[in-house]
Length: 166
Image: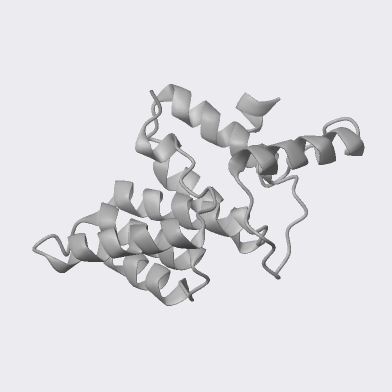
């Protein structure tokens, strides 16, 4: 079974599902659970899918969680996934940061799943203008097509995983 750090958490939500997630998350964070991470990440996810600004929420959570490696890694991976789902270039930096932070926390299977996923997602044509959100399967299919059209694999200099990816 995939651990939380190895999961893809950013498949698109329709408006109703995002509103329901937001309502449930706010109800859970409004109680004595204010410091619990899961409802706060769910709130961030829901607000992102509703098209609301989330950068300030991300920054606030990041500052608050800086001494909690697992939580910080999860936040970075989630935020990177959300951005990548809309083909935003900044998502790769968050994915890489989350991957670095989680490297010692991953199970071996999750480590390889996540590093291979991120290497493939790096093939996408990313930009600074949000595109309609896509689920992971569609993103990976597009990345595989791009990779195939480019021809033989080229070295990826910024990849810290060349020893396991070649």
